[in-house]
Length: 298
Ligand SMILES: Nc1nc2c(ncn2[C@@H]2O[C@H](COP(=O)(O)OP(=O)(O)OP(=O)(O)O)[C@@H](O)[C@H]2O)c(=O)[nH]1
Ligand SMILES: [Mg+2]
Ligand SMILES: [Zn+2]
Image (tube, rainbow, N blue to C red; front, top):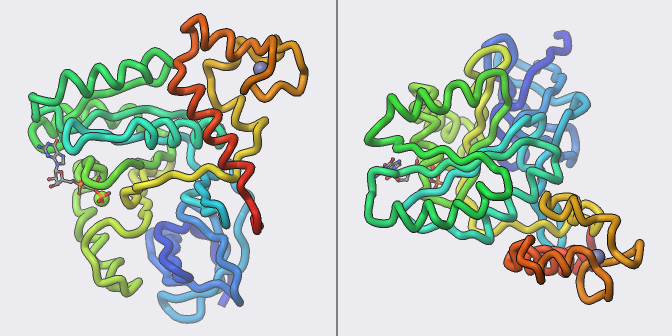
């Protein structure tokens, strides 16, 4: 059989589901190589009517990583944008939202925030107030209710997704899969089928899954996360990922300034004047600390 081209639409352990011409193929990698991610464009050699062996990963336009002290994990490849889903209830973590934004900046992809479950009115105002900090940084925020105002949610999302490769990420229970099933009717069923094929046997979101909406539009559902390590980002990547630092970079007294305790640091001076949120600067220091904790880093 001849080699085919496809896109990875789901990854679980060392099993991958590739879509090629509307058909799905359960693929494995040769040997131990397993740096394949959802969204990857691949070539594979069919070994039966619906199975194959991955040959090559085609060059990626973008890649989104998270990492801990020991290794980094490719969450998805070839994205153009990331939507962070938060909700009125359960409450969301600002630390995680900020980390996801930093990951998007580092990957060079656009980032949005979606506030879901606006039908739950009691916590709505405080959620809005908290999100205002991200709006001030220039990140667009959209309000939705996947359950109670699904038509409106669709009308909001569709134009944002058009001709983009989008991933929805966020903590568990925020409503990522609910939004996806509005966009892709039958998505629930597809996940259940894939769970069986990839042998997870679970119905909740346990792996990333790409849904193709049209030739140029796709959306990825991902499992909720409880932490978002960014150990792989270097200091230089970090300072550029905090977009509000940009006007100040290059104005520090020392060219190799770490923006921590150095005299004449333009960034910490901006923090002192209230132009940069001190919570964000603290996160920068924390991430810088984490990036230095890499004993056996690959
Ligand atoms: N009230 C209300 N509930 C919602 C809304 N959207 C989703 N939910 C509920 O929130 C719960 C979690 O929704 P999911 O879509 O599974 O959340 P998720 O982000 O995919 O969660 P994980 O897969 O665990 O990461 C479900 O019980 C949904 O019915 C909404 O707009 N309003
Ligand atoms: Mg889900
Ligand atoms: Zn500085």
